[in-house]
Length: 355
Image (cartoon, rainbow, N blue to C red; front, top):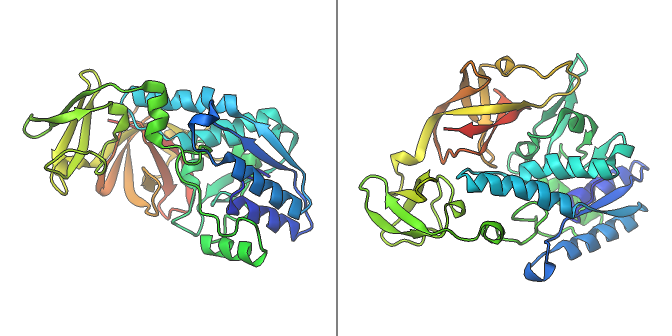
């Protein structure tokens, strides 16, 4: 059991305990490289995890994946943002750390690894295991799990995935769990209160450049680095005469293009290309071809409660074009497009958006 100190994973331990089961619990430690520089909640997390494990008579071991996180997830993130793309560290953290580095260190000794994710699994008539959505559309985390490997899905167990978040809170309060009223964690996976821009600035610094209005070519100000901005961004621009929306980046010339207005047409797209699709289903003799995806799908490009309907068009190079039913705000290269069946029940996998 991966026990984080949050209410969700703590209720998982309770769910096992009420069945008379006492899983081995592991707290994955990933703190900043120089803790005195960061406002990190890891110490409190570990205290909470220790209290919950003790309450239910479970062994708790701390597994240090600090170096793996900074070497793998941080490298992925910085490589992407340096190239002007929009990465998702939390997605890769699940693949590389929670179900990756942890498995290499000790998870390989176990048949099943449980977490507090809001997701479900099901096995079809052919013995294949699928990742399926949670009934709570706000908390569903299948989009964060859509890049894990098939062997990782095979071992994954999500005991609270069938609950709504309110139900989990109610269980925690009823059972007097120490973290029953603790707020959900925010920010980057494992990094607690660390601000994303501070995380980027630590490794890439600042690289000032011009901010240009797309329609007129007029210079309206200066940015501190393209990596601090994402396509579709509306807030935190700090320029007069707004609102302004980020619509384009020119990495070679270090120019940030923005558009003026409350709802600029340039901020929307209806068709975009996805490459490197990663199928998420176990027990296949070989990975299915991208052309085996259904023609009609639903998808997400960010963590929202909404599943957007679309059709797929194959390009012949192992990629496909998503034709959304409606125009989508803030489509950015580097984002993961997470693909579901048309009833948004099974999460089929994900690929990276390219324009």
